[in-house]
Structures are given as structure tokens and as C-alpha cells.
Amino acid sequence: MKAWVLLLLGCLLATATQAQVQTRREVWEWTDANGVKHYSDAPAPGAKKIVILGSTTSSSGPPPTPSASITKSSGSSDANASYSLLEIWEPANETSFFGSDAVVNVRIRSTPTLQAGDRLLNYVDGRLTGQENALEYTLSGVDRGVHSLTSVIVDAKGNEKIRSSAVVFYVKVQPANNPQTKGPALRPPTPKPGK
Image 1: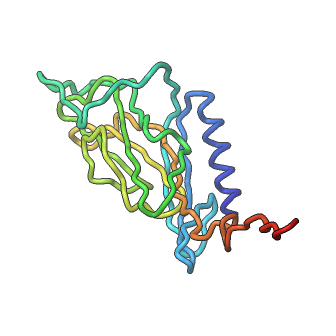
Image 2 (image 1 turned 120 degrees about the vertical axis):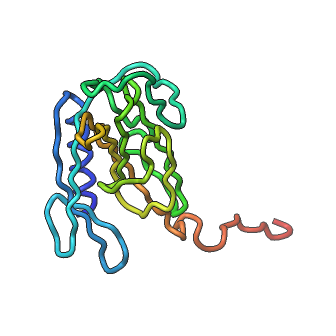
């Protein structure tokens, strides 16, 4: 069932990138008795709901080099300032990371830059990261499974102004024993003397 969910998520994300649309997706997350996280589009006993909201946009050209944190514009706050872009451009959508010690570097950009009085909130699997107003941050110790990143810009009252498209990434643990290297190495037979 896990492969089916991954295939479904991949198809949905590929379809969504073809047009600019507002999307709302409900995903259910639960951990089985072996500690493995599962995701599904249908609820299961003990599962919690994750709502992924976003709009798909496409961009061209190389990404700009962002600063480590957003520089708020000087001057008066424009409560009606609108944003044309809020994008998580690293990691790329559907990137896989391997190992329990995987580090995920996250980079975000907005057009225009964050306006005075507005806040950038970053989420992993629907939970705040604590990286407010950060254009770059690092995730470590992420559990194995499928995860989503989203960012939202809100005004001083907490009203949403723009939301990024969700970026999905995978954390996979490589098996401890590689079947191709298991056991002693095979060597060609040693020729017998005189033959």
C-alpha cells in the first residue's frame, strides 16, 4: 500500500505542475507497531490528518541566491502589499535522502521580499518548524518516510497572504546488509602445480 500512496502522490504532483491551480489535499499519517510511518488518502485507526494547501506555479531561469534570513523592507508598512511568488526551491520536489542522519537543506524565495509587518512561517508535515522569517534552514533527525514542506506569509494579524506549493521529500534508510556483498568474496580457483 505504501508504494501505491507514493505513486499516487507522484502522479498528483506531476499533474499539478502542468497548470496554476489552488490545491487542497488531505493525507493521513500513522506509525505501525514496527515504528514505520505510513501515509494514505484514507483514514486508519490512530491516524492523524495532515492538510496540504498550495498553488502550483512554474518558474524559469536559475534561482536567485537568497540571504540566510529575509530582509524586511524599510519604510512604511504596506498592509495591502501582495506577493507574486513564494517558493521552496530546495530541496527539489520528490528528492530522496538516505540514512537516519540525513540532513535536508531548505531554501525559500519570495517576490517581493518580506514586507514590514509580515511574517514567513515554515511548516514540515503541517507543523511549524520554529524557523520564522528564515529563507534558509536545515532539518536533521527526520524520521523515515514521506514528508512535506510548505511556507506561508501572513500579515501582522495572522491573515494568510500567500502560500507556497507543497514540496514532498523522502527519507529512506539503506538496509544494513547488502545482499550483493553478503558472505565471503568469491575468488577464482587456484591452479594446481604442473597443469
